[in-house]
Image 1 (cartoon, rainbow, N blue to C red):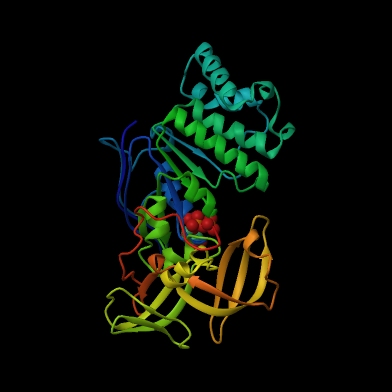
Image 2: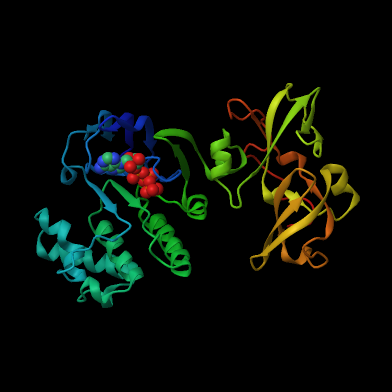
Length: 374
Ligand code: ATP
């Protein structure tokens, strides 16, 4: 499959600039996930690549072929939509074979390819049904099958699982990944769902206001977010952000509650970022010595099953932590407790620019976590 390149893509709707200077390369067989807040331009970017919208500037290249001005059907790209977009009057078989028929592929070859893909997706028994006779999950499988049958240069997925219930979503996610491993098809996938982004992507692109904030592996994006926006957007619950100052290598939060050594960060106003999963209950002295110990109160406990989100209150500061349920047994709402912040996993951002300041935990090897939240 050829490499797909976007060069300085601009898109305006009237005076409104929706995408501004997008440069991206989708490597052969790579699975790229596009994420970003609602309205940041994700769907517009997919529609531009598919040819459903025209760019206001820039180029789209598939291999050496400049497809910027080509019609959608000339681009060899298949798009799977959130709402499935199946033809209601056609059977599943006809829906899946439609693209091939439109290209003049002969009936025998259409049958061979539709049957092969139907088997791959476990939908052979549905081939004679109309879309209205299918569940949401089955319709989505057919929509995916219709794209796969065409064997395109590039697959575009626009939130394909968001209409499905949570259980089916998880199942379909695994199936899509298996399919990707089988086909090695270059894929661009838009989602709102962080788990989908982290779990599916070889590469994640975070967009905001039509501008790429960061492109990286899931590890890079999670462990080394380049700015406050990426840091706050990826991870659930979101990273805790604490305003403070660094002076002579020591960070002090504005309310004076959190004081910790910073390993040589320059002086200035900063925001300390701490992921909820990097706050632990210390189980031994080494944990206390390694981390920054804080006395606080468990204000709210939200049990999610095996894990719980705890809102920790200190004088002027509130932090969210994620603990395994087994470390909660002695705590009720209102209990005092001591927690430690893992000093190896802190993030510092410039308070004025929002840009990352420190180089720790940059997606490299980590020690598997300390203390008692697993
Ligand atoms: P969501 O996550 O909510 O689906 P998104 O990141 O996919 O959002 P887009 O649908 O690409 O965002 O929209 C980006 C911006 O472009 C929005 O401000 C939207 O209102 C605007 N926009 C999209 N399509 C058009 C259009 N056809 N005409 C005018 N403005 C549009």
